[in-house]
Image (cartoon, rainbow, N blue to C red):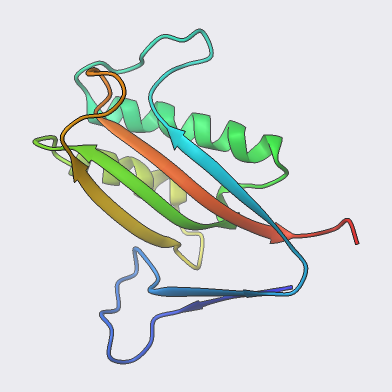
Length: 136
């Protein structure tokens, strides 16, 4: 299996994201549905605070990925939904801290939306991860 992260000449280069990801070979692809700031008890964490909500979302993402045999560094694509009017910077700072110095930043799409499933949700993130398929 191989995963190649590309930032081709002619496209903007940014250390926070890649422009293209190519996978080849036997892989396990994991699709994680939109995660929001709900804890395991069903309570919304960080009402009114996008940074605190981002913290809970990343906890949820790690749990979801782990259940499928993946980790954060296996993420190749994020879709990030931010409620219009919210400052994305606090959530981005959480992402930078959680991602750390891992190489190969994933593809990122950020969308500003009118609202999410619950009016207290300020942010939602879905992910696609690719890991080696060790089953064959």
